[in-house]
Image 1 (tube, rainbow, N blue to C red):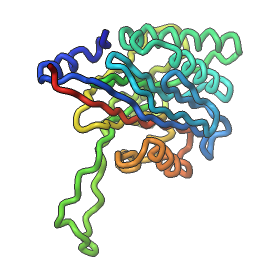
Image 2 (cartoon, helix red, strand yellow; image 1 turned 90 degrees about the vertical axis):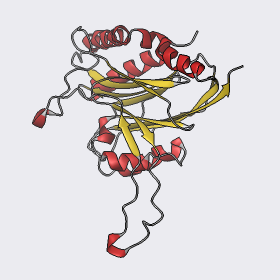
Image 3 (cartoon, rainbow, N blue to C red; image 1 turned 30 degrees about the vertical axis):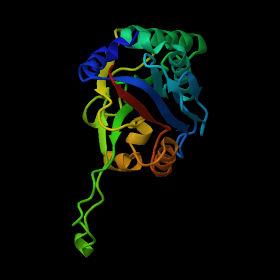
Image 4 (cartoon, rainbow, N blue to C red; image 1 turned 180 degrees about the vertical axis):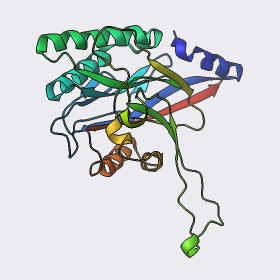
Length: 287
């Protein structure tokens, strides 16, 4: 049975005389300690697999059934060296093992269970303040759902607009390179102003009702559709314009990850993690 979150889009396709007949995802990701931090507290997850060590990477190209869902995520731990690393590992492992449909059906409940496990582990291990931020993307055949708590981000990335034919080299008046589109799908849980480094909610800590930010976007335009998920070690070091150009379609997800990592490495003050995914789909006329 198709995922509930994508039912409406599938109904719309059927009304237009087309339905998804096949889809696949080409993804790549990596997580890095960076040049400033003394420990690695980030993690990434994709299609049931987790990477937590400095420089660890994930990649895959699953072919998916029309009613399948695929979960991707970036986790940013906090609470000291061991606390942050443990919180990120717990969250990534639990979420990677979860059913994406269950996460879509009740994200607050699913993430609250992860949060409570982090709290219990922290009390046993002597790191009760440990926690993490998380950004997840649940990909389906017709769209994606972004879910986040904290300040990890997800984006939909579009190709740069074509440069007009008359925008040739004019010396000092040479046209700037066209910018790729970078549409943020997530919401930053941060205090305003000089306290922007303080998160207003995270996974871990005292039991409470989580306000999981949820945003749905359709796969509009030509296949493939590109998505990016990252921790604040990346989006805090690079401007949206730079991220958009570095992650733009026209290169493989792995090449985009490598390019973003090269740009962030000398500038980031934190661990940083990157996941890039291309959704490929085909449709066929009904009947």
